[in-house]
Length: 311
Ligand code: UD1
Image 1 (tube, rainbow, N blue to C red):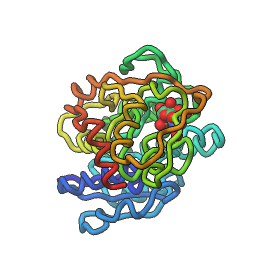
Image 2: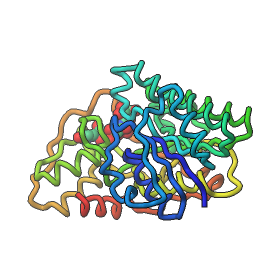
Image 3: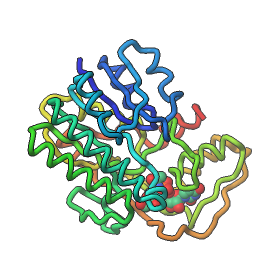
């Protein structure tokens, strides 16, 4: 079994990835500064003797070099990031440090100590607000936020490192990920996390626009599985792939599932569409199947039902 270093291990996607790695018998070193991650996300993982958690900032000089030198991982899954698009606009310098400098330090540490693979949390945000759907990997990269710019720059950093040192770099362009442990704290958090909290608290949700907008919502369990595959499956080569389902789900579809589970909660209210909101987003999932053998398996309806049960 392998040794895997997971940055951002206490985050939403990082904690699910850690859980699946441990379940598959791998040894995991988790790194997190708890800026947006929570120790409670790792409650189960912390009971495993194969897991160690290090509180550290990936973007600080020397941190990754020291940890990689000591742990000697077979692969690094780099998920630590500034995750809010909105925050990247408000604080571009912080975005640069957490989403670009951190990747440079991860790549440098991997090269210095002979790590074979890096799996990176990229984003559909690198495609900007294209209306040319479905989005495949050849779609022009035209990010419209510092967040999207940083994810694209990080891909470049990792592919250059792969060219220069022979390591394998896998960049996962996540679409709209949802599931347990996603933080609903800001109005710009993922819509499903916001809706889950509102329904749980007995409060009506607000739909911006007519609710017919669609997204390619993908369960965090599928996303974690894609990370595990990319880090551990033999014979994988460098590349970037969308991590999506290829299916469009509207907000009205999402609300229908919540409303059926919470009949006492008042009906949603409708408000004006958000400025800059895109109407439809949909990924083309074929490359992940070809390159990783990954196909999303969890239907949105059952992932929503699971989320509601753990709500
Ligand atoms: C994603 C980003 C967002 C970024 C945008 C453009 C996340 C969670 N969001 O938005 O920060 O600006 O890409 O790159 O990564 N909605 C409601 N009610 C709510 C909340 C949201 O109706 O309470 C709507 C939104 O207006 C939108 C849809 O739900 O139409 C989905 O919103 P969201 O989850 O933020 O995802 P994206 O729009 O894809």
